[in-house]
Length: 390
Image (cartoon, rainbow, N blue to C red; front, top):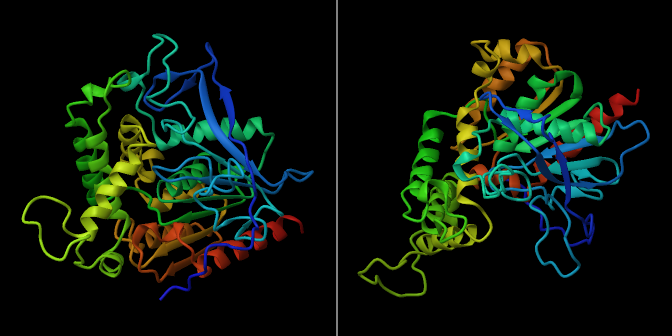
């Protein structure tokens, strides 16, 4: 069993933080995307924690997963009850210590949490892009992030950290801009989606597109495809859990009843839970962004992207030190995919550490309190930072 720690109750938080906006690629200098189209201006929402040291050598860039955002730690106000999505890992004295490192997290291109995406206003029409927004890739997201890093005056990144789709971005960074990266921590991720993962994403996308309110992406001035997006989230949420976690949390327990309803109400606790997750998701996320981000993740393939034919050749571009972490119960991005990356890295003589953490909670385990993961991240970052000072 994993070692779990209680949610931080010491008050050691980055405190109240601000979301910032960076806009670039103003016409005629638009951002050129991998599909050949151009986009501009482009805005990225981002947050920073800690201080950049005088030689700018302590920057840690965190990449978020599908439904995440730039708000990785802290609170937007003293009255806010819920902190950033990785409060357990990022903060003073924590795994990613903001007393020591300058931490940056940006919302990805194509999302709906402050960065330019399909719900943004198209300057050519004055209306939301909808499906006129170009299909972006993980590489395009990383290119946009690099523009932000350049804006912040950072020449070298001490470490990249990200799980799931955030991990895809970590890997892309390491191969796209290898001379900028000192180290990288890809968590619960993969060099390319399996057919199973693509299949789940496609079913989720079809749920959105089958909603009568979707209107081929043109729904911003009317009813939104909430039902389709809720079902898509329910599908995705199942893949983030595991058989053991669902058995432990729900089993076959009934929800607020002593017997079956003999209709299509939510009889079981797991049904009620999934419906709740779906309904909450539609309050904060955009259906089109879900389509675009999952498609970008499905397109991701390091061997194809770098025209190498093999992971070994692909990672021949990398120069970073790596800490690769997988979780025993993650069946969305299972450990064999992490091991394939580690093997390819080692064949290129890279400095690689690998750990498969025993955890019952499935793919989402990297987001949950886990002392072993915290200690691994903290120790790795300290080693890498100390080595840069020698």
